[in-house]
Length: 387
Image (cartoon, rainbow, N blue to C red; front, side, top):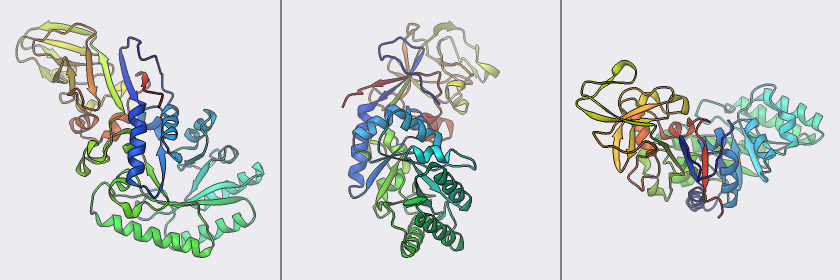
């Protein structure tokens, strides 16, 4: 996804304002939560919708030691944009761009023998060793190598390839299933199994640069999981990984994105007037309606129909009826703002506006999805770019 950016002064149908000062402050706050570990800023999926290159630069400027992406294409785009230092990518499929990743000096993740075979073949063609991190499945049940014989084989064959000069095992890592649920028994179980699998690899001769399992919630609440490196994703953007863990402010974080739009129309309607598809909402009396030019094509969740909150002229409004592809309506209750007045969907909450978490509650989802799904029709406007 390529984000469209515009000057902060341009008049816009809608805008996602990205506060890079807040992002830099979040990096520093997260480093303080894990002072003994290096920090990876995860900028996958265009930095959770915020803009990968701009956010990666800000994170590195604030002290992030690593950058992380899901796909190799995302990582290669960071290199092409001039981002230096360690960059890791972990979501590979057969036939992926292994040689390009090796030549770009990326750290690549390997979870099984097919991937080890492909990366070593690519290293032979590239004429240089690959930087490889072996991923252990300690209980999440997604990517990663199973403990036992599978892990033993992967470690053995990785050491064989390392001895041939085809790769360097730079990391051993895993991922939590329930770190956003404090006290969940799987947390301690996964840490214990991770220690065992790392111990086996090191006994066999692996000498990793980094061992890591902590995601955002573990970085904030499970200090025994920090090891050599913590991988911070959603917390980097000032969103709590779980409302049960605390608000962003509880962790010294500040939301980075503010989503707003200009009202496209304000009009008077009588009572009993149907609004939007299916007339899910009918005005209870004479009122004014405001048209917000954002819809599910822009990432506004249709599940937030008749529930999503919007701040207009200092008052919370609620979506009236269904969210359409390009627009939705709010009942202004007789107030008469001018067309072009600002409608704030979410932000840090400083001005009384809703937050991404409020939208998550309205749509029955998580705040991760709310910010990540904001589409390319909404330009990103970067503010406070200079430290």
